Structure formats: structure tokens, C-alpha cells
Length: 144
Image: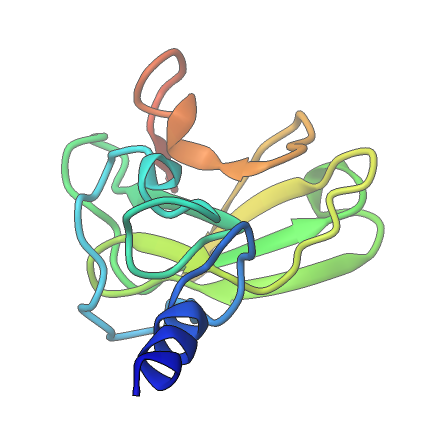
């Protein structure tokens, strides 16, 4: 019996892995803590349910209200140039996240799309902790 409990416990823990946490989706309201650094809790050995390889919050141009149901695109070159490596839908709470493997390589260039508006980041990212800088040392992410 104790061996079975031990096996179940081991399977439920992340132990340095970032797997099985899911991906945000249009209309979903499962996320929380908009604007906070998601990676504080949602890392391989973190206390958060799920582990994210990329996560952040997107706002309206006023930088106060969240922008629900947007899309994050990751390109190999600035301004939507190069290859599109990943597209992730943001949720109803303004958050976008995934536990899927993201290969950042020498850096990826994010773009946020909402309706007919697109906001590009002109510097590459090499990890997915968007709110580590945005909302702290740089402006919150917003779409015009």
C-alpha cells in the first residue's frame, strides 16, 4: 500500500520537469494573479499548479485593464519576420501561458494580436517570464 501511495505522489510532483501544465485558451478563466510574475510559482519545482515555459499578462492601452482573449505569436525575427514558431491564445483574464516546450535559441520576437491590432516587441526574449520585466522595469504589455 505504501509503495502505491509513493508511486502516486511521485507522479503528481514536477521534480524539475515542466510538463502537463496546459496552455491558456480563448474564454478560459482558470488563470489568476494578472500582472504578477507567473514564474515565481509556476516553475519546475514551484508550488503553483502547472509549470509554464512562457507566461504573462496583456493589458489595454491604459495599462490598467487586462486585454482578454488575445493571441501571442513568437517569431524568429523582429516585427513578425522570419518563421512563426508558436501561436498561443490568451485567456479571458488577460493571461497567456503554456507548459509546452519552447525553443528560444538565440531569442524569439513576440507579437500580441488583438482583432486587427498588433504590438511587436523589437528585442528578442530568451525565456518566457514576461511579467518579470513588464510591469516592473518596463511598461506592461499592451496592444494599441
